[in-house]
Image (cartoon, rainbow, N blue to C red; front, top):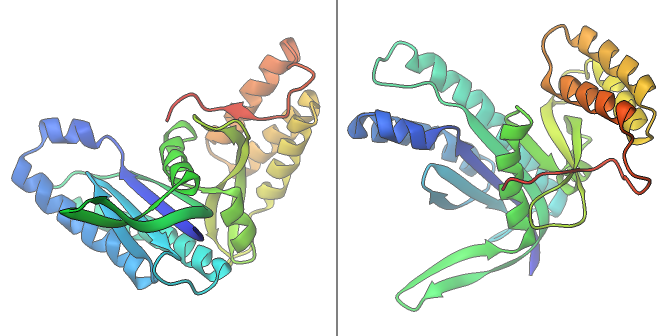
Length: 262
């Protein structure tokens, strides 16, 4: 057992793409995509654990650890680089009729896992297993529900908050777990100061969890106005506040949301 940081990434709508795309062209595009995505992992000292169809699983701290803070920082840096690399790929693919625009979701989590060789005597695989891995996969999937591309768990945020700007997304109970975890969206590194709306948004979330829904609404509206464009998370919380003002949550409500999907 040892602490590691795990990254999962997945292409959105890939199953639909396989049904409508030419196989040779799709494989060629996948290989271009994997080249850049895996390059981001390897550049930041991660272990490419495996491809799972169109998904990538990478780990920091399994074969070598530079310390849990450095491992986590490298994983998050890799996720940011993957975001940038995909934007460049999509820009280049615009001029190529054989390529389709891709969108991805990335989940990053830190936790204790089992590291070892697992499998059949004729086909052993070095891998990591455990709750820390499962939560990373759940976070990757949850990017769809929260309309974002990168989600990190609370342990990753705590280890790396001095280096990156995060936005609280939700206190989330994922499928298969009973204890909620704080989930964050990755905005950027700290080469630029955080936007002014972020503090207002975080104040609104605190009011929401304190059951002060009418006050939270005012702050979410102010944050949305400063963002200046449609914002899913502000809209989500405004909708929840309206519902709870009509029908208050139970006395034991802790502000968490249960995610029914994997």
